[in-house]
Length: 256
Image (cartoon, rainbow, N blue to C red; front, side):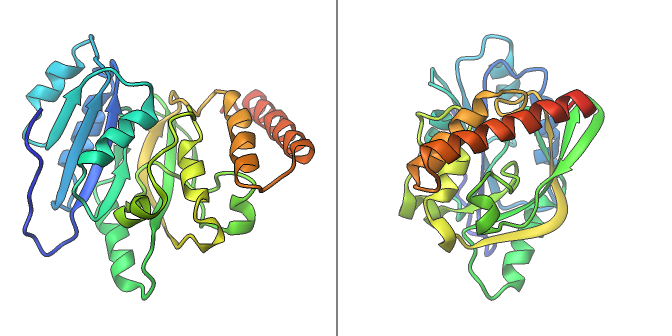
């Protein structure tokens, strides 16, 4: 563990939180993307789940760019992110997967968007490229829209900025979810969520994450929607089944 950053810069401090487990193969790309940021007032927090493949040694080798890290057992990504939130000092919080990377201008572009807007956003996101190795599969992410968001997670969460005060108002991630905790968190404010969007690619992600290629996501999204009173059991199950059918069809046709 290393000391947290203390900054007296006039620019907002951004806390980037990454959870890792046996990520020695993928983490170098995330490290490189952090080092290449043109915005410097950030802290990088890594929560490791007792990796045994050399990840901890890699983290120790890069303590010049990592401001805080621990390696201890956890019950999944949302518990790890909650641990990161507990020590984060930033006005804004960004979650980056161990096998994902930020574009060099990602943080500065999103903060510039907030600076130019009269509205104080809770959440700012952009577009995210999805890769299978070096192969670009597709680009996801669109502006937040309550009508659509009630149905599914239409915004890209990877690399997005969350204002810290949102967590102070609505709490931390629900660790009973394995995949859809980020969706559930943003639903807590309902249609009052103040969400901004920049039409730029802010991050790249690999398709091997929890929510990719995992049909369990449809069960969790149904549970989220029922929890927030956005559907009934009958129509919710019907919508979930139709979403799963479309997912299988897309995988069959284009392999994503």
